Image (cartoon, rainbow, N blue to C red):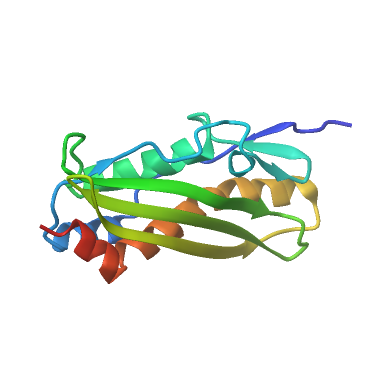
Length: 172
């Protein structure tokens, strides 16, 4: 019997609807602090799919979310590592559950803090749950779970990008 012990997470690609929305909002340049927790042993950085560990190519899921955020901001022309407006984030909940035989879900809760010149402009927790098809067969469910994580991150970041409080916090 062959058993998969490590399942690589699909790479993140920007959601261009979200990127276009950011471009159209006339926002200030933004820097991104490292998303926490950066400890690979933190619970939010470990996802297991029916016995296989889902892994982010860049080390941790916190880093995956950080790089996704930076990539979206770069695509929108808003990223600047030296900008006085900074986004900090903490991954609070992070899971992909493939135990369902028909439908499964992903959950991601992210606390986002926006500061400008070290003064707080926003502190808010965003909660996202996505659903995706699954299967009784473990390998099929595993593949669906691996593909679902980038979609979960897209959905979470989109929720942030459309929030008027977030937009106002990074506006000039």
